[in-house]
Length: 373
Image 1 (tube, rainbow, N blue to C red):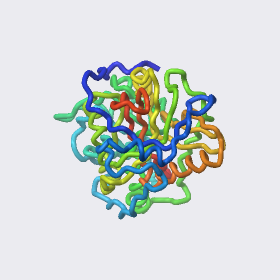
Image 2 (cartoon, rainbow, N blue to C red):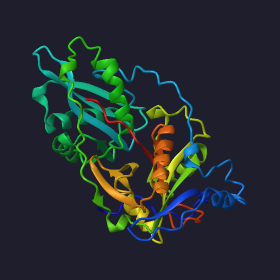
Image 3 (tube, one colour):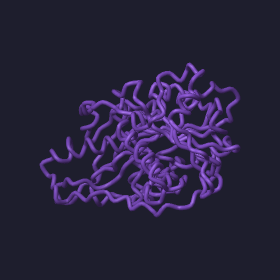
């Protein structure tokens, strides 16, 4: 893994609003740091007026039910394009669909989009034209359009197609990135399952083969990603979005998500978003190394008494450990419930210590169901 070179080290940063913490644990199997009680958290918050209306109890994070996002014409696009590709990052899927051509053979489909959904492309292919040469030619035609710009990176989540996709992109001098951070694409696929494929007259429900991720067993965390302590934390969505502006400006390491593009644009700014804060005296290089991994999701594994970090497509790390007890297990479950209340939205922040007024890295994450096809 190479430390990303495109990110300039920050020179001036807006202070990160201090994070209310509820549980402190070590990133190793050493004696855990003393747990802070809810009362001590509230006491610590006094005198910090910017910590408006925050609470220590993660279990109190409750999001109201929101209506499902409506289906747009872009979701039902077939053999066509909306917008022009100009973004530095694309999301791509190339796979068979449960619909059939005139030969009675399964159709394959190429879907490409920008992370914010402002540009989308869809095209069917016969099953005898599934190769890197055909994919390269189709992508080349997209890039030849007036105003089109070649992306730096293209994310894709199907490991089974890695050889074909990677070869086509590499020959176009575009970096292929296996990643679950194809958040808009995943939602687009789910919408198409109901609004496009299931309504096709050739659709066969019996031919739907559920996508299998086959995640690897959790690995030990690489030394470069290890901190000294970690905490469950939370922030109001509005405050979190303010901090993510530093990521968009490339002032700090990290990754953002367009909430509108994943159907979460209706979340209120007061929604409490749970997160994990990691503390290290090496916070700057640790954040840089973390940026080299496609971090998609964090969740507590109460059986192993640790956090699990999901990166790339099916790779997982044992990210942090805690001393098993009834309280710590309840805390972990409460954090996961808070994540469900925020509709899967959560974050990872890297700081030098719990009292630091600036962050070195910030990642907005999403627990997202993989497509059913």
